[in-house]
Amino acid sequence: MSMINYASREINCKIVYYGSGLGGKTTNLEHIYGKVQPDTRGKLISLATETERTLFFDFLPVDLGTIRGFKTRFHLYTVPGQVYYNASRKLILKGVDGLVFVADSQVERMEANQEAMQNLYDNMAEYGYDLTKMPFIIQYNKRDLPNAAPLSELQAALNPGWEITDPARQRVTPDPFHAGEFLVEQLPTGEWIERAPYFEAVAMNGDGVFETLRGVSKLVLKSLASTRYRVNLPNAFTVGRIVVTPLIAWMPLMPSSGLRLAAFALFLAAAITDYIDGRLARSRKQETDLGRLLDPLADKLLLVATCIPMYVLMRPELVSAEGWPAQALANVLPFRTPFGEVPLTWWILAIVLGRELFMTLFRQMAARRGVVIAAIGPAKWKTGLQLVWTGAAYCWFWTATVAANRGWDTPLWNAFANFNGIVGVVTMTGSVALTLYSLGLYLRSYGRVFTSAPVGGRG
View 1 (tube, rainbow, N blue to C red):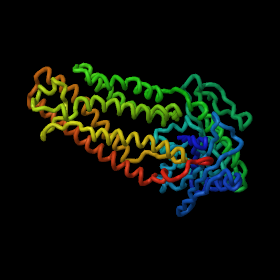
View 2 (view 1 turned 30 degrees about the vertical axis):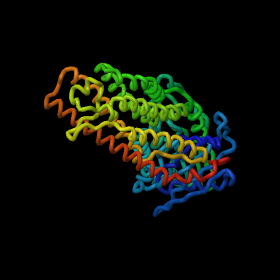
View 3 (view 1 turned 180 degrees about the vertical axis):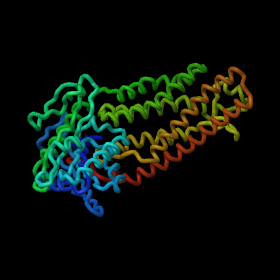
View 4 (view 1 turned 90 degrees about the vertical axis):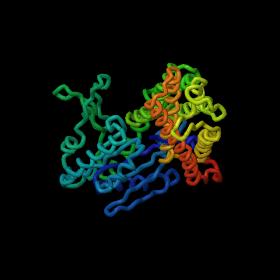
């Protein structure tokens, strides 16, 4: 997933070199690193395994142009070749924008190449990525060796093509790098297929190394330019959440079981689509600037919108000795538990909303200094508990209104009311605890942002 550094006006893209062990991935990156201008590249980081190394560095090419005034910085990675290090492979693939599969052309390495290719498809699928819909290039390395397999056999084994079912894409597309060959074509059986572009290389000599890099880089830039501001399905979900947020805030304030049921349903829909749109964007490679702008805005609007009716209906000063169902009929709806009623105090909202405001400003300050603050595990758990807490409150507003109007006071109803209350109180407590804990972790990890100077050049 490309990241934007607004301070240095750079788009940071991640390209991963994948393949079997000792196939030439490291050799590719070492050659590129040695040839790019020193003032445009970062430090070469090497992580050694028992048989080879995993490399990483970033560089800013000077000949690929800009996207809406932003330069593009490429971060190049290799992965460990051995399946033993598959956990590292998957971690490096996270957020990838473009892929180069480096195949060893030697006949005896054909099976290892096929295993690595299948492993790539499997690992991408675990992240929800569709390899056929993202920038992907194959490099056939070691073409100078006498035991190199014929190109036709390598293509048949590693790049046979994938079926195209979309009629709009079923048109013959010549391969711009190989005269007389096609990236998209119709087979004699009538089936339309698409193949990944490929390059031949002798990485030890540098042959084909930069041709491969330019090929995948141009595909990444083309993908970014075509999707960065497009309104797609994930963005439409996000816009929908923003549109219904005022209703989610207003409906529970009305003493109507129908409106409160509708508010509960809309909240559930908003929570579910929040998960779905992120997964869709990643799997379809449809992450856009518009989405990155709207998604956090939608989340914060939803949080504020739900806090308003929750506090109005659950605040401590409303609680009286009248008991059930008089309190509910008077729109006094704190959580009910076996241990008594639990209202929503102002300081809980102050912690929750204050933390969100602080982190928004904190991330903006970090971005100005070229630092990206990624979400951490406790923060994600906090969000999950927060959603369950809010869902329990909205469910209570609806069910308590129905029960009060109908005079329910049966053991079954009381058991449900107590269960719902326990769920709400436990998740509220956990959410507040994780709110403070995750804030402490962020400050410990990124506190230097307050003392560092804003970035004026490279990120």
